[in-house]
Image (cartoon, rainbow, N blue to C red; front, side, top):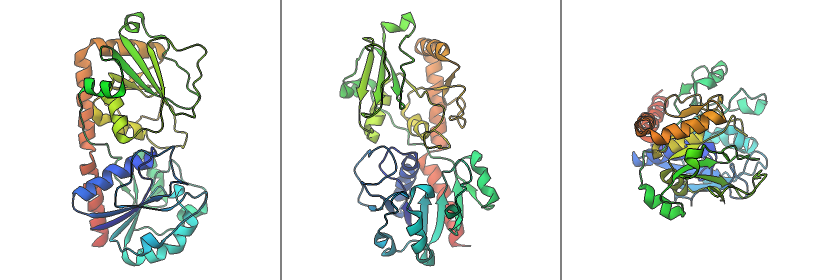
Length: 345
């Protein structure tokens, strides 16, 4: 099957986290895949995570600029043409060539919206199928009643020696490491760890170069603060392999995303993931993540987690089970089943 897909790619955006494992699984299944993505001067996300593969063509910008060179798409023929997250694409110019695409290909939109858009441009395309990845997106059924639910994919299960990862990242070899991704305007709420952890733990805080770090004092000696560009997929994994727990203290997406793509990317790496219990952003996950009620509860949870090896093992097993159930291969096959049904309709 020849599949073309317009999507964010090799960036730190949630759309790319969805697209990459599925498309790569299609390729492993023997399908011919061509990715069309944003130009490097006008893209979706904070930065790039990897070099492009030979099947990637960058030929358009975002809806803000509406830049679009259609020739890489129109000079190829596809059985299926997939569009990921319409709102981040040059919609006006895509609409002009959409009838030409539909002459030869069945068209599928993978919607990333968390509410029905009010703008009329969203509804101008006649899709053969609209796919959503979360039950919270069933509002789409009011407009697309034959829509399909195919869950957000996890990244594959992968493993690496903890000591090797720590050496690569120049991190302490003899400490428990708590790893935290930072948001804009981050405040170091974990500055005061329980006394029994302070001497044996290290808190690694990762901050993009242009983010504020709202510290009132110099970081304590057990806190490692690093500023890094968006992580490559390999470096993202290395920090997880090196850590004993990762804290995702997030309550909502700056871009109004539906789910936490970071969790779907991280689950298969085997590092316990801690999230705020009152956050609605991690609702798809149950025992695959560990929830804390407040900062005091987070400190107690970390203490218990590091003392109780059995709890660590159980949480890791549940996370791996979820990652296998929603693996790239499983999700990719579900898409192919939908594509086949369209071709035979």
